[in-house]
Amino acid sequence: MWHQLSTFMFSEKIGGKLPERVRETIIQRQCEAERLIGWVQLVLVSFFAVLFAVAPPPAEMVPYQLEPWAIGLYLAFTLIRLACAYRNYTPPWLLVISVVMDIGVLMALIFSFHIKYMQPPSFYLKAPTVMYVFIFIALRALRFEPRYILLTGAAAVVGWLALVLFVVFGVDGDTMVTRNYVTYLTDNAILIGAEIDKMLSIVVVTLVLAGAVLRAQRTF
Image 1 (tube, rainbow, N blue to C red):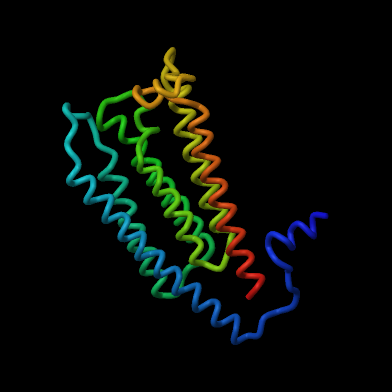
Image 2: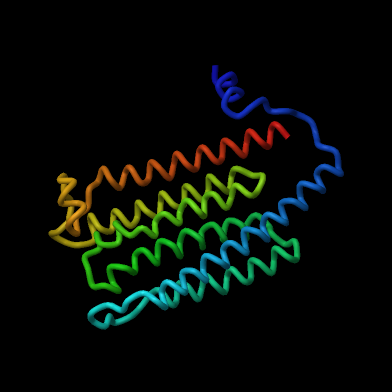
């Protein structure tokens, strides 16, 4: 039963080895994909920097700003990663670190919003910046390996769950949790169902993209 379901969803798994010429071609295409991913990441971090530069300053000065450090660190890592891609040096450990950096920096930027504007932690859960998660997941579909798509999706869910838990348990005596949808939209409150819905969307998109890449891999 499981074999039939797996075949229906992901196509039939073919045994045997690919010819050497085909394997070399795939490796070359993977290297090209990594260069493209690096350039897209560079565009994204440049966009983050521009948004930070033109964003209106908070009404009051905050003791410190996390955004410049996060953007600077991500920019340095992206340039190093892009250089490695052009040298055809992209070992699995570097790709894993790249995934962690993508999601980690994004979550750090989202987390910094409530500090910058001096609001309760629930403030950052409404930030539209979370949509960049789907860009980072989709980027991994440029490779021919679904495991990096799954890793990015898993990192995104864990990261967002950590932000939600910080809102619920990080402020003593005030969880900001509500069951009223209007209150959730118009106040600094958290609706647990809405956050579950976001994480479920991340999971579904991840599985669909990973399944599509796996089908393409097996069909090829």
